[in-house]
Image (cartoon, rainbow, N blue to C red; front, side, top):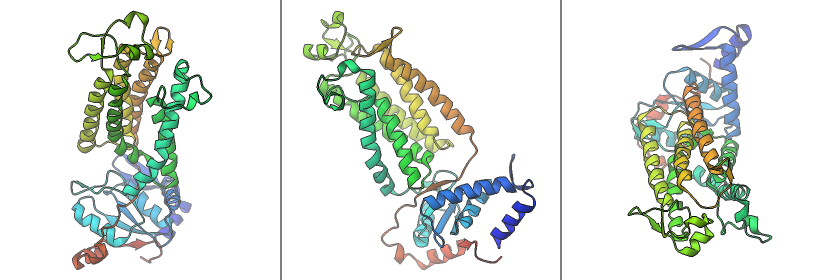
Length: 372
């Protein structure tokens, strides 16, 4: 049996080279460790003996790791070729009833995206949205205590003062990662997928600042200056010497434009470059934080100051530098197999054509219990 032979080699010659992929080499012991780790993640994902797990990868060391992991989990593996047309791959997946897909990159077949399971996004959203609200309010309460209403419920009053985006994203990321791990799904690719969407959502949210007259900048005579009624100037906590001005920098508008432009860039980059797990999310952190450096330099509303700079200026600088370092580290990491949910089967999957069924059989479903 394949597994018996492999485990025997691990015991007899653990330091012998088992796989060589370009300049990367894995010994039998290293290969076993990677495979067992992935097998454990498949088990947490809910994969059980006799389930089918699709392996979607080019010829590489990760392909070997993935196939061994599926066998160690007691499942059957279905090899999928990324060069095949997307429609063909989708149909084979539907016919197989795969419980999970193990991949070493984006699910793109024949140049077209395969997509994933939208139910996962809904599940995660039910956790991260409340977490984002809670985290955003905690950050607001910590960083702008003077703006908390003087009521017993003041710290919870999200309708007064608002939320801090830094805290919302931070806690939502932690909770989202926890939920994905509970589902047995690799977090990094999911984070990459939602990074542009987060920017679009933030841009939409900033539209509210036009109506509540918040998040404006220094006084200006520019044609697009925003007129702020006097009562909002006072409520915004701007310096007394600026209260007599009528028009101010619409910093929320600048952020809307930046967010949408950055979201478009991340989508383009994801389609034209090999971005590894967490890479796009790291660029989201760095890109948004870089804009906030500019934004904090022109804002004059209420804030905590340290050494003459707004508190959020320091957070923005840390986010920019940290995001760039994070991106560099993510891109330098070797490719590793990730686990994703297959998309939902099409309603007519059971009525698929006979050639597709033959093709699925021809692809071969190999199991660790079959003799070679």
